[in-house]
Length: 175
Image (tube, rainbow, N blue to C red; front, side, top):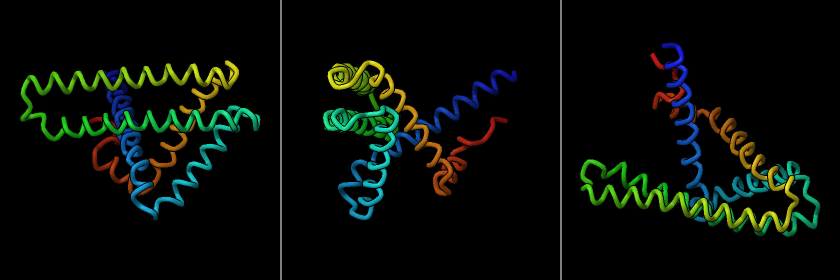
C-alpha cells in the first residue's frame, strides 16, 4: 500500500508541474498584450539567454547563429502549445456535451498536435546540428529541462502559486 501512496504522490506532483507549465505558456501572449509585463519578460529572456549560453558554452559566433534559430523554434513550439492548451480548455468546458464524433475529432486533433510538435523537434534538431557540435546539441536539451525545473522551483514558492497548488490539493500527501 505504501508504494501505491508514493505512486499517487508522484502523479500529483507531475500533475502540478504540468499545470504550472501550462499556466506559464500564456505569458508569451500576455507579453504582447500587457506592457507592464514587458520588463519582466525581457528580464526573464535575458536570464534564459545567459543560462543557455553558459550551459552550452557558446562562442560568440555560435550564439550569433544559434539564437535566431532557437527563437524561431520556440515561437513555433509555443504556437503548438497554445493550440493544445485551447483544445484542452475546450474539452474541459464541453466534455459532457460532446458527441462521440466530437470526442474522436478532439482526440485526433490532440494526436495531430503531438505529431506536429515531434516533427518540429526533428526539423530543428537538424538545424541545431548544423550550428552546434553534437555535445552542445545534447547540452541544449539538458539545459531546456534544467531551465524549466529552475523556473518551476521559483514559481512554486511564490505565494499566489503556492496557494493555488494547495487549494487544488496538488501539494498535499494523499490520505
